[in-house]
Image (tube, rainbow, N blue to C red; front, top):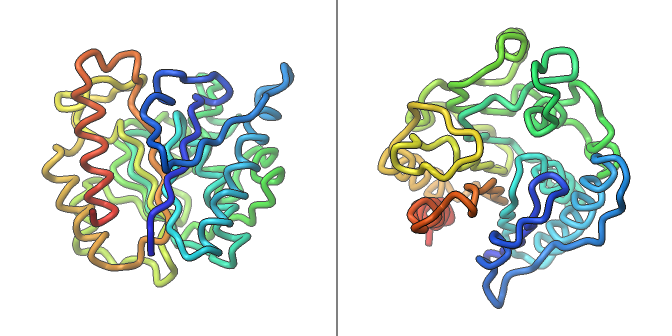
Length: 255
């Protein structure tokens, strides 16, 4: 099984030319001419093309590795897996819960909602556009989610999502039986080690702790797709954050 890298150089619908410079010759670029219309229309176009690329990779025997500037892109990855006949279990690494809906969000930021959308909560415009069937909450693991909004925290506590406060808790937790989709939001890292984040949150795992968990997951042989939401390239003056995050991604892929 080879790894097929798919780069979506956008944050929601804003192009990220600095992120596009990371593309390698064998990577697949997910670029679209986006209309000047509602934000979710443009995002759904990106998710649709990403889902097609993910499904194509899986049908060809490759493992899709999505790299994008925001967490909503996971909608396209999960939809692509389903198109290829895979209903995945989901492991979500993030400093935040991404479990807000329009009823709980204090900011109105759609980038704080994708995990809720994936399990069928809140607005379903983007999952429906990608043809996504909701993921079962009991097959979702969220870690470490140290920075939660009040309403989001209550929603998670009342859900069937498995929340593990420390990433190292995964080492002794029973993983879903299904093939795994692992989502790695790089801001899960302690910003002392990876400071170039748009929404940093103090605390979090060290690179060594996360590497230990990623090595464990790689060793299970169950990781069928990977999604990574990146650092902010404009803030990464010396490239140190990119180096740490890409090194960790390689560990997760067993490279």
